[in-house]
Image 1 (spheres, rainbow, N blue to C red):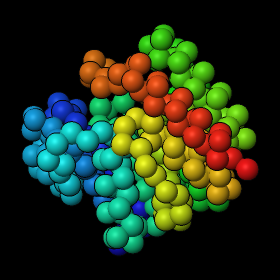
Image 2: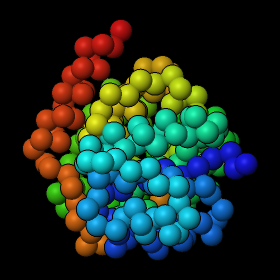
Image 3: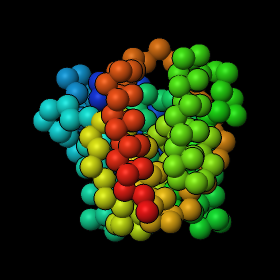
Image 4: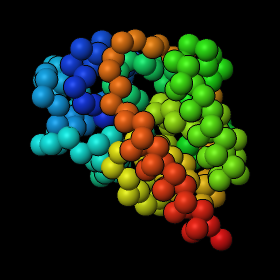
Length: 223
């Protein structure tokens, strides 16, 4: 059995998930798609490509979808997971380098770094990401240039020891903060990024509020 699997949280992603899964499947990775209450053909398209599909009856948020995928991976005894977004922004060709970097450097988490080619990122998102990444880096006392990137390798032991509560986009930050509190090594590797016209479901004000509440909670909990 493969040591690692790919987990993709998906919502209304029928237009992009098919080609993405085909590229991942060519590399031989088991794929778990968590369909987060989509009303389009996301689940059917993923299933047709051979992915194992877990469906939420209602939209519960990216964080909850990832947690559902993590629970399945742990029950299935995978040694680690790679997480990717469903909008085809991430290049599956980069999956091996995330895993290899984690194995070589004994890292608990490897985060993809889009900022080496940050100019392709839309302007407002670019500067918001830089600010958030600097804040997160200061909190975890490790340098993470792109803390909001969802393309990651995560060891099984991290998922077993890190409690996660977030249901929305702040899950990316919570995972880093919680892992750092347990002294896991977090590293970054450059990745390619493909921006397209796929709609973003980020809501700037509510999601920013959740981000800062999360930082405050961990700041107060830090010894």
